Length: 168
Image: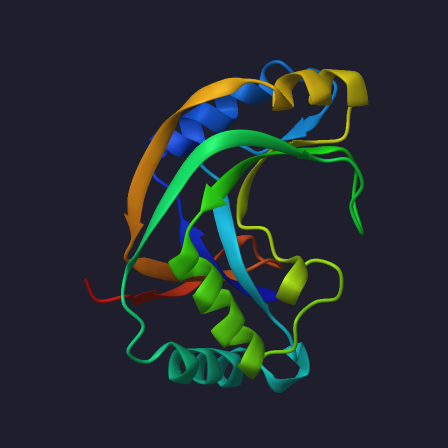
């Protein structure tokens, strides 16, 4: 499975790491691996080169956009994997518009994309629900940044396959 991800600044990754320390029995991300999934690229049977070409065509002319985290939130239940999921909510009309645009090229993944898409950075998955609820009440200082590139992420190899710049 491939996806298009927006890199997050080190301040966002550090915040997620710090928050995850309060969820001892949950699964947190490895330091430095935090990203923001913009769109999963369906149709894996077409091969990576074809997926990348279709995505690049869909992204043509897409400008950089602003993003901001200001809240810790919680998915109590999720379609797959351990729940609950504590996350940093990402506010970005530009990324949401980009996701919608990519959904015109690649079918949305049921229950997590299209109208259900919530831009976020995962803090931790699983663990005790009460601890997750308490953490979701944490107030944080907002962090703002500009998303000026996207990463084609290869989930099988757990590494970037390539990148695309978004003009400022």
